[in-house]
Length: 324
Image 1 (spheres, rainbow, N blue to C red):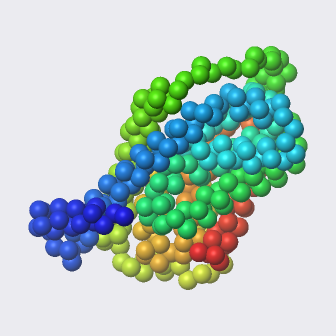
Image 2 (tube, rainbow, N blue to C red):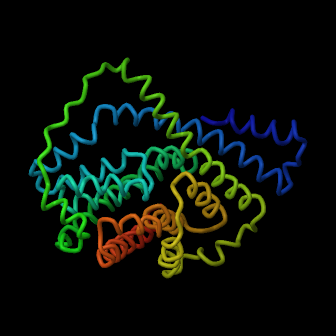
Image 3 (tube, rainbow, N blue to C red):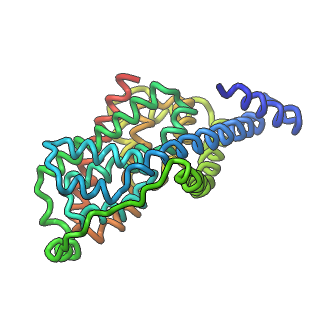
C-alpha cells in the first residue's frame, strides 16, 4: 500500500541528495523519511475516523450512563473501550479520570479507563498498522482493552475508596446531582468541519513526538549494530520481560514517541512481546502520571495501582512472546 512512499524516500535520499544506500546515514535518513510520511498519513486518517465516533459519543452522556446503569461487569469493558477511543497519553488521561471520580463512577471502572487510555488509541493504532501490520495491531489493541478490564476489575475488588485523597472524599460527600447533559443535535455535514479541525489539532499536538521518536529510531536503525539489543533483551530468557518493564516504568513517553523506537528494537533482535511490554510500561505508567494522581489518590493507592498494572504488563509480555 505504501510502496509509492518507499520509492519517494529512495528517490529523495539516494538520487536527489546522492547519499549511498549502503551508508549508515543513507539507511537512517531513508527510514526517517519513509516512516514519517507513512505515520502522519495513517495518523490523520484514523484520528479523523475516531473523531466521527467521538462526535456521537459525548463524554458527559457516557459518564452519566456508567454512573446510573447496573451492567453486571460490562461497565469495565465499556470504560476500557472508551479509554481506547480517546486520544490521551497517561498524563492527559488523569484529568478525565478525576472527572469520572467526581461523577461518582465506581473506582474500579474508572481504573479500567485510566489503564487502557494511554495504551490503546488512534495514534497507537495508526502507527502500529504502519510498522507491524494488522495482525499485531489487533492483538495489541485487544490485549490493551482486556488489560484495562481485568486490571480495573481486580482493583475494584480491593475496596480502595478509603485510599482516595481527602480532596476527593469531600467532593463525593458533597456531590450534587447534575442535570442530564443535552447536546445540541447537529447533522454529519455540520459536524465535519469540527471533526477535521479536531483531527488536525491532534496531529499537530503529537507531530513533534512522532518526528523525535522516528529520528531516534532512524539513528538506531542506521547506526546500532544488529545484535546490540538482542544481546541484553533477546534470547528469550525469562527475566528479559520483567527487566524491560522495570526499566520502562520510571520513563515517560507517549505512543507517538516510543513506537518507532520499539520497531527498531524488534529489528535489532528484541522479541516482539518484550518490546511491547517495554512500550506498555513506558506509555501506561510514569512519574509525571503519579504526580498528577496524587491529587486524587494517596501514595499507598498509587503504589497499589502501579504494582497491579506492572504485573499485568509483565504477564502480557510473556503472552505476546508466545503468540506473536
